[in-house]
Amino acid sequence: MKQPASSFAQALRTARKARGVAQEEFDTVSSRTYVSALERGIKQPTIAKVDALAGVLGLHPLTLFALSYGARQSPGDVRRLLDRVEREVEELLRSGVERGAH
Image 1: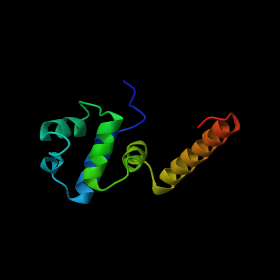
Image 2: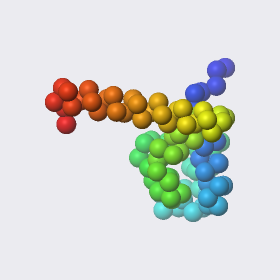
Image 3: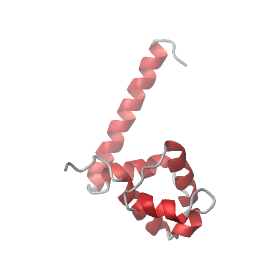
């Protein structure tokens, strides 16, 4: 079976441990059981849930996404990923402005 391009489970676990946050500390946004299921890859969070989890960790949600797509990569690979995202966002914003989108 092909591995997914991202590993949110590993990213969440890595960020939580690096920040010294216990699973129980997410109790204002989720149950310990749900956080455990996320970290084991059994469940996948919604964007709203990623935002809430990142808030508990004191991180921007994009940090969790970047870590999930770059967890097995070198810092240079993560930098290239972030450069790509920046270029794509700028391109989309320019395209939207050129078409009069707001």
